[in-house]
Length: 447
Image 1 (cartoon, helix red, strand yellow):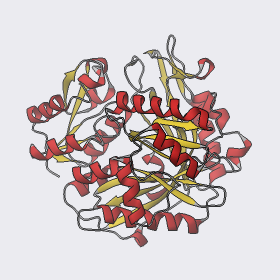
Image 2 (image 1 turned 60 degrees about the vertical axis):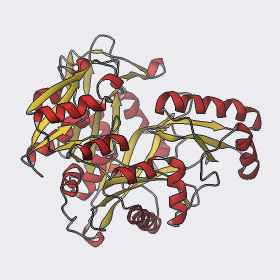
Image 3 (image 1 turned 90 degrees about the horizontal axis):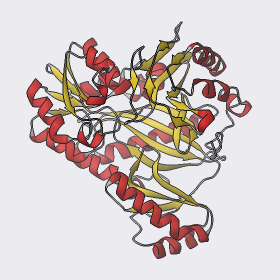
Image 4 (image 1 turned 30 degrees about the horizontal axis):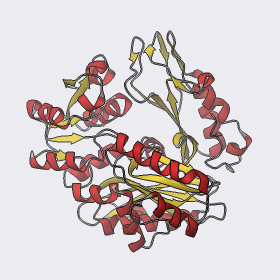
């Protein structure tokens, strides 16, 4: 890839992308809001451009400001990270119009797969199993009630444009449906600018398993195994691991093959993730495609030895993958814990503030992706993710032990600042997690 990559993001992912770019000899441009003026990536990048005030809509979501920063700095490509503009097909189209490489799938593919209703219909055509529900947007509460009569309760109402665990509501009985439908539509309109919703049957005891795929523009694709993301709080992932523990390898292989069929049928290019629910009998059901790098991508990197950001950049530059599925090797077990600036003792309330002490864990096979440092002020304007602690070990028990040690070593302090490291440390000692018998209900909905 030619010379300069602008990183249209912030926090740990912006720094992580910048590090791979530097290793590949690429010049980097960071963009930052007023709240992130002193962030780690601003200091690390070769150049940094201020793009607006703290609110994301005025900075990181401001397409004209990001494009102008690319023009000013002569950027050849834009890596969007995750969140913000990473799954915005309009942004990808503007990049193409400006002759800037967008590091992600083509805009038409992103548009089709980003629309959850359209994506579900496409997956049916590719032979992927879906939970009973609608394959298009549900237009009224009455239509939702009619569908509920067919598929039964509990059910879940999801925003067509949703993602990141937002824009969904579980309904347990008919008396809740009308209000849940209206509230989900209103929330979807406010958060995503698209009030359409769809309905599907809700699995109460299920595992959340995803398949990472990579595809080039020449019709070659591979999958990089499964990640288990079942440890969640209110649909937000807390702990991820690869491989998915206790899951029959034959099921994983079948899921991988199904994801590859859909990847090629969609004309997908780049790194993407197919998310599934797996029930107690091992039956799997397609949920959605994430057309971007996932927060949890490091666990896949640790077990495959591949740098997914480097692979994204290579594919975006028009290179072929250069390897087949049989060439992808998996080794050991990797676990990631998301450490947030939140206080578990106060209902996980965000705790912004200045960090007066930051000490990161170390030792063999311990990786910490973070933008935190002593003197850094955790802003209130953004997601509370502060660090991703990632470990590798030859087997899962050793990986759990290594992670608990790493979390106990992590020190993040500041007036009014609390983090979730202790909560995660204790969570990993839960007998259900250790036995890999847990599902998405492990962390109660009340926490």
